[in-house]
Amino acid sequence: MFGFMKIRFLMVCFGLVGASHVFGQVDFPGNPTVTPKKFTTRPLGGGVNTGASVEPAKAADGKVRYVTHIVLYEARFWTSTEGKPLEAKLIAFEDLVVEAPKGTEPILPTPPTNPTVTRSGKVRLLVGKNPVEVALDRLSEQDREFVDGIKAALTKKAAAAR
Image 1 (spheres, rainbow, N blue to C red):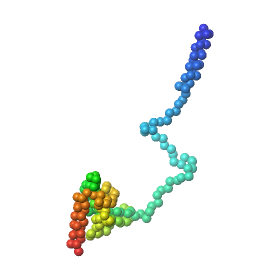
Image 2 (tube, rainbow, N blue to C red):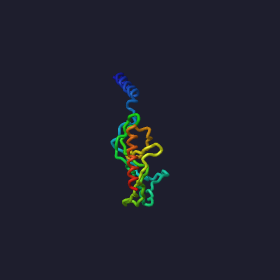
Image 3 (cartoon, helix red, strand yellow):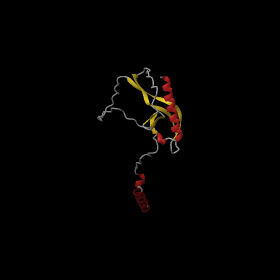
Image 4 (cartoon, one colour):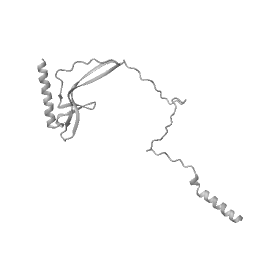
């Protein structure tokens, strides 16, 4: 009886020693591709001085700068010499810029009678909300003729206004 108990005891001991790595606590890092379900927050300040502080932004002189682009032709598709299309508005090189107190409606100056359509072999397009200068030689022949037509029409209109 004792022999059987000894063997059983030894088997359990060796089994536990051999399998101790199975019962040990292993900490695996979280999966970085999965968003955790609960985020922990930490309080600001907390008694630890990090050397950084947050201060509210200083109010400037209370003025806002308004920039208005002079649209010469509404949105259309422009084609590059490689055949790639681009939807954009044709805008002048001049912008109407006004600074007004915050919360008031700005009074815009009058636009020029003959706005600049091309400058240094480039045309200005409004792509989304960003003005972009594009070289005329990068545009298709049809688009270059279109720009020349707009330029001629604006020159004719400015001459008639005088």
